[in-house]
Length: 171
Image (cartoon, rainbow, N blue to C red; front, side, top):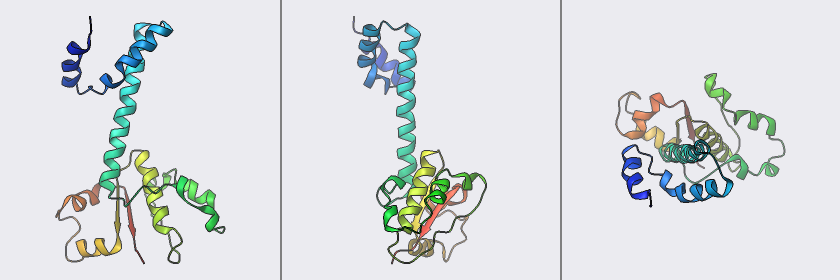
């Protein structure tokens, strides 16, 4: 008897249909390793948690309005030998967000300020913080004639509750 048809509707009703993606493989693993039912269930639930966390991160990254995937892992520290890596990696812990401290990244054009801002925002999103990234021109045009608390679009409604905002200039 194949339990999938009976499970499919129940899992969809519980919004756990992602379990179906790994059910067959985990079932085979449980049989091969002679796992107890609770261990099998634990594996399925862990898979669902990972899938749920990935979906939440993807949604945060979409809402952040990034222009590509910029991470610290992709940052070329060798181009900037005077940049203090320890400080950058400490910023990536995002303690500054919890401490409500602003961070200013300044320097000449082409030195990776926007990359660092996006990388720190990416680190914040991975840690569960909502992030908003915008360039100065777009921000100025959007907020120059409005009070920031007046919602005009999705980004402006998110700004007051967003704990990590990156504003950058291009050029």
